[in-house]
Image (cartoon, rainbow, N blue to C red; front, side, top):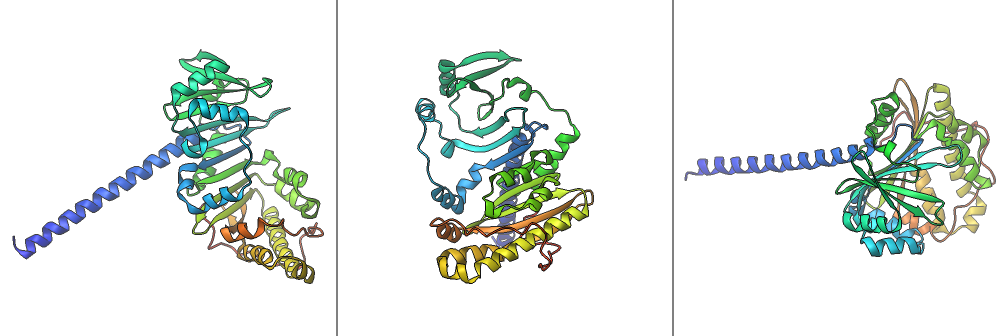
Length: 363
């Protein structure tokens, strides 16, 4: 074979191999996106909050492992230990995707979830049949198992061999019916699409009252009535995390209908960052705070970015910051320094919010 012919054959083989690898990658990517979409599209449009996690992707990233080691471990309760023993299922190992919807009720919130992973269906159904009830609704078997003292129950059904739906509401069947292509469903889908690059995220609608929730849970030194009021004016809030080398990038975004609210929120958040940095550089914290802890907070605050995004119909404020293993290791030994108070009004002197962020994930 001549050198020229050998070169042509080699090039052809390499090209064919490259096309095959590209095709395999595209198929894998499309299959993963389709699976993710199938889980998210099952979320009820009347939900107030939806939380999603691609646990399979997170398990492959080094930082979430550091995060899991940092979080205090609670003792496994007897019910869950019994479930593990009888079914062999362990969510840390066997769960790949999960989406959970929170639906506000008059008295109690309801949860609905769809999970995908490796399930031993026979063992799980046998376990449920022994401790609960089974019924056939529309050709689908639904199991109900009492929780705790029996006052509440959890109902579940297998959607396929590797996908399960469950709820703590009184009836699972309505959640399994096909959802119409409503305006609410399209609104949720739009936010899910923006967050497609994030393996873990939460989406909250306006009626989730995030500002009121923040005010009721924040320690006194961190409370800000103005911040709570502005957050309650947002139509949507999203919070997403994406693992990086040695850390995870957190992107929070709030959407509202008018320019004034977005400008006020952007200015307030920028001012709060400046106040936090000034407080950490103050003489009291310099003397009384461990230098490692102080440096860890300063690193995160200085690397944070506040920007505004104009999508035409809505105006958004985006906050981006990185949480690193160094930060977790430093702050695990002590709580953050609590300021005397958070300014109730927008500071007069503030750093202008940038129009865009180099750090922000593509939304």
